[in-house]
Image 1 (cartoon, rainbow, N blue to C red):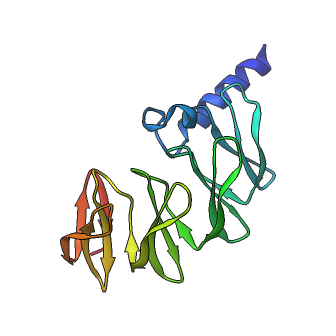
Image 2 (spheres, helix red, strand yellow):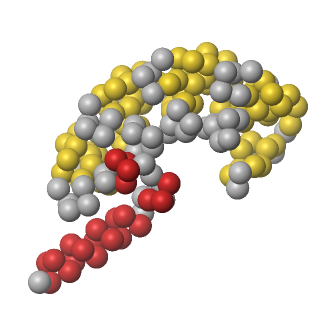
Image 3 (cartoon, rainbow, N blue to C red):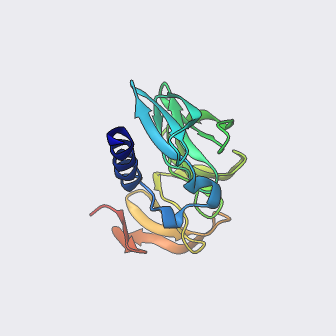
Length: 171
């Protein structure tokens, strides 16, 4: 009985530490919890069963059916079954939002789709995720917004951007 209570309390504590609130997760995403043991990351279900082997050097919560994972130094994505769907080739990445994920290679940021296809070529000094079809991007120290096709819709002229209750940019 004591072990069951400790396990349940531990699971509740673990779930409260997720990077992404459960209410914002997709149906498949909400069933997987990112965990770390002995230096390796994997995923368990809500019963505590390992469903994706602890094998990653780093891992993040699922977003839109994809999770960021690393082996060695580069980031890639897995699906909810643990299959590598986008090979580890990016220096930095952010989770998928509105079907696109910001990716960085050799100091420039662009965007890929859920299949790993580059849809907006890396050209920005910094980029963040899309919200309501707009994403903040920075080039030469100035911030603006692009649409999902990569067109600049708000000119890059701002030193700092704060929007959607999230801070983007640096003063």
